[in-house]
Length: 116
Image 1 (cartoon, helix red, strand yellow):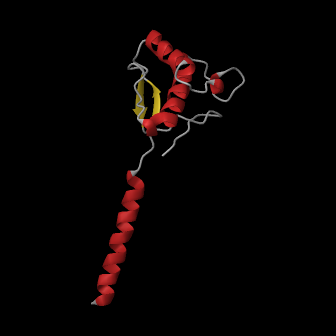
Image 2 (cartoon, one colour):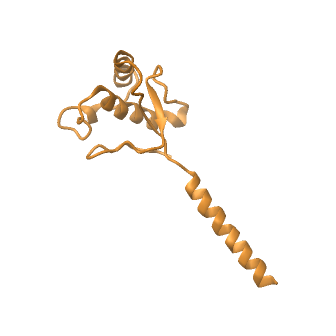
Image 3 (cartoon, rainbow, N blue to C red):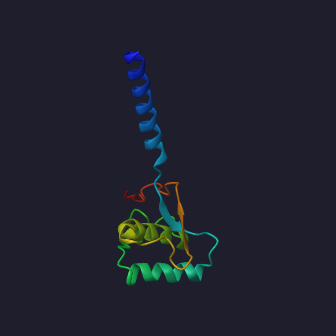
């Protein structure tokens, strides 16, 4: 009987650990493709200027310059800001220009960071 209970306890522990590990998802902040460009541009400008975000990754010859589109550049910057400041209460809003996704938007040489 003792052996049977030990096996059940081990099985329950394994199931708990397995499901706990799979329940945690990353979240990245990206530009919302449905928002007008002028809203996205204003939010991008704010993040790079007053927001204190390092926007060097979207400059020519840098890892996130391509594709060279407003939405792609904004996604890199919005995510960088969000990951840096979310633990201090920052959200992924940017005047409605951004949304959260659970799909890692990294591509080619452009790595989108995720901080737990």
